[in-house]
Amino acid sequence: MMAYPLADPLVVLREEFDDWAVLFHPDTGAAVGLNPVGVAIWQRLDGRHTVPGIVTELTETFDGVPGSAVEEVHAFVADLIERGFVGSAQSQPG
Amino acid sequence: MPPGAAHAQPQPEAGPRLAQFYFYLTEGCNCACRHCWLAPKFDPEATRYPTLPVAAFERVIAEALPLGLGRVKLTGGEPLMHPDIGDLLAVVRREDLALTVETNGLRLTEALADAIAGCRQPFVSVSLDGAEAGYHDKVRGVPGAFDLAVAGVRHLVEAGLKPQLILSVMRDNVGQVEPVVRLAEQLGAGSVKFNLIQPTERGVALHEQGDSLTVPELIDLGRWVEGDLAGSTELALHFDYPRAFRSLARLATRGGQGSCGILGILGVLASGQYALCGIGESVPELLFGQVGQVPLAEVWYQHPVLLALRDGLPGKLGGICAECLQKSDCLGSCIAQNYYRAKDLFAPYWFCEEADQLGLFPASRRVPVAAKG
Ligand code: SF4
Image: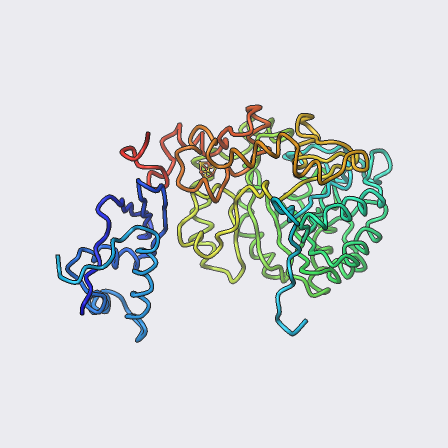
């Protein structure tokens, strides 16, 4: 079954001068830095994209997206779930 | 040990690990730098002021090893003017400790470079405040200092090391930032670090006279160093402003730099006094007792200042540090500096405080207003 990850709506994304960004979780006080690809992924964690769907869109925006991108994005999203920035992926699009 | 295997880090039996000791080996120094944050007395022959006895050095190490000691830093004053520096290095080698040396390079002979290179994981930083003698010697207050320092760097490179050059940025030498990087490339150095002038001891006068750079100037310079200049060289460049000002890209690749390491470090001064760090020379409250008279384990596990820091960092940091998203990694940048200025272990760091007052503290590194309270 496809999973549609959804960012915690409380989490604040603040972009910086060089297109990196800080994610801040107000409940836990946790903060994490994202590179520009991470930012693009984050913006698609809206409960309507699957990981393969996100990767397809990334290949349209960024050069040189590797063949292993789906696994890498899965790992990235799993890490954000683990840190509490993303709710568990839902099985239906939101 | 098989090739490539990591050196096992000693672990204390219980409690926090004392990972590193800073040895301020000499009370005097053979330079008289305009900006020195410790202000040692000028003593070119190391005959007039105390130096740490070898027996005390050995005793500190013997007591620190069970607490987890893995690395020692030799600094000063000027560590290489210690009359028994060869014996001290032999102790470091014998105990298989990793070694850091901070030196002005004036006495860095071929033999000393080889002795340093024989220790485990040697890392040496040499101060160079310009790529020409005119700049460097003026800052150091010693004619001929530049030639000696450059010769010292060459000895280190010939011994197989990749030393770091350190330039303390001030108004007079700000134009030397790029030339020093080019000189470092020519000499075979491994990295260049740009230090801020701290408003401590001799640095106070530089700040008051406007001879240090302003916070806005330093922010601009740091961005340029980390961006354009770093992109033009293979060398690692490190601009020592606080973490809130570093780009996330730099933090991702060089995360450990620019934090106060105080929770795993202790210092000992040339007088044989345990201290938070070299600031103990100027702030008696941060002295913790005499080597040999008080057991090191007692200092490390029970001294009220250290207990207060372990209990209070980072949660009790005040001012802008309290609101900073980097505080868990940064720990207020430099506790000794903060204490020197405010007599408060948890006072905020001057640079970030000033940037905040000027409206220049990065909004993205601050706890969002809605999340406070
Ligand atoms: S505000 Fe404090 S904790 Fe944050 S970067 Fe500056 S010195 Fe470090």
